Image 1 (cartoon, helix red, strand yellow):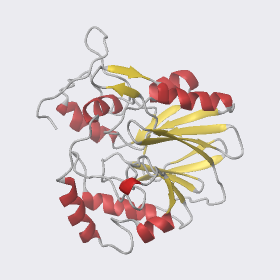
Image 2 (spheres, one colour; image 1 turned 30 degrees about the horizontal axis):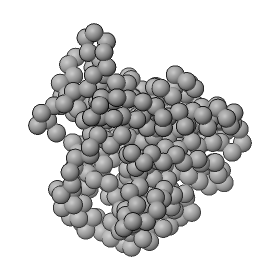
Image 3 (tube, helix red, strand yellow; image 1 turned 90 degrees about the vertical axis):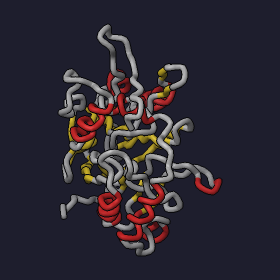
Length: 294
């Protein structure tokens, strides 16, 4: 198992931005010793029925960074999201920064390149992104050392990013009363997700964990921050010593009952391109709807 360079002495400033339309939480993570920062899992707004894209949520992140006098170094995607669209290129155009995703993006591009009949002009080598992270890769935000943990299961390209005492878990975990994410998309695996969750829960107990989504189960207020200790003790899918066999059985049966995310078709086309909307031969932005393709 990879020995990760954990540093619990560095405590980044974390600002959360909740997107009510998609139940997504985007983060601005600031190095405590400089003005450098990173954005985790940005959101581009879409009215799918109208075919209209706007940037209200991304503009909130941009405004905060500008008002605080911060310098954006990274725009990180924890995975290729199936439930919201990334605003990474829009933010990069305004503020700079490198766009990064897990190296297994190539697997996702290969699978969904075929689903959407993208043809040879669609590159399946991850070159739409500036950086492809592999397990254990170390990088920095200002003076703060950060590292990536490969956490496949929900999708092949899922990564957890650890910055000081804070870990941004994407869809690898939900809040303790939310459990875990589905594994039935192409390339998903309940067995792999369990192993990935165990890697995250091997971090120090006091590690702060930040979710990508929360749905307020049982009517509670939206939450997005917990700890490794609380997940180990209380997570309804993997906590309190639940076995891999128990998890796989539950997850597989549960996933068979779930409907497809409402925005999966536009999300995949945009997000596998690092947030760029595909265009037709005349340069017009377009989205495809593959019939019986998913």
